[in-house]
Picture 1 (tube, rainbow, N blue to C red):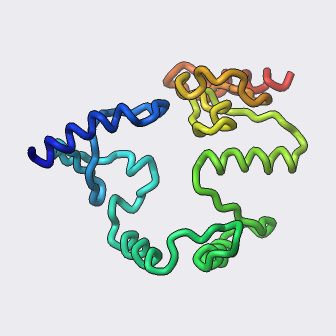
Picture 2 (cartoon, rainbow, N blue to C red; picture 1 turned 180 degrees about the vertical axis):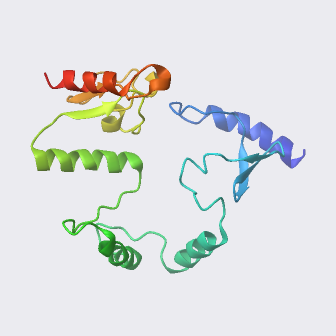
Picture 3 (tube, rainbow, N blue to C red; picture 1 turned 180 degrees about the horizontal axis):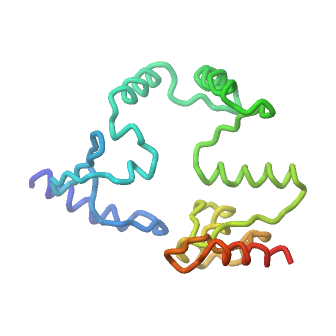
Length: 194
């Protein structure tokens, strides 16, 4: 059996074993990427307009990124942050601190966008002592329980989970092309506070 036939057979089985909940644009299977292009098991070379949804903005498999990752793997792969400090994180912090506004003196590192969103809400609630959060209709914030309450881009992310966290207020995003003028959006926002 050819490699492509084996991978096609195992792909069909594998797809059925992956938890649902993530919408996909295509059922294509990607095998590699270089620069702005990805390769599929079908032998297609496709332009990746999303650059990995903004994650690989240097392009797929950029040589300097690969070299840095390989060098790091030769030293330590996982340095647990609640056990000790990681030398590269401290170096990055020293680089970033001078770039922050003068009244900010702390950096939060997270591993996912959902973690960043949820922690920003925790910090805002602690600082303001207010519990309401305003999000735009149609926005995507993540699939964790907290961010799921704020995500309105698709019903699939919120279905069958019961009551979500309270205090989330949804307002339309001003998008004239879709008939929502800035004035209409502002009026909706004002209504939230009446």
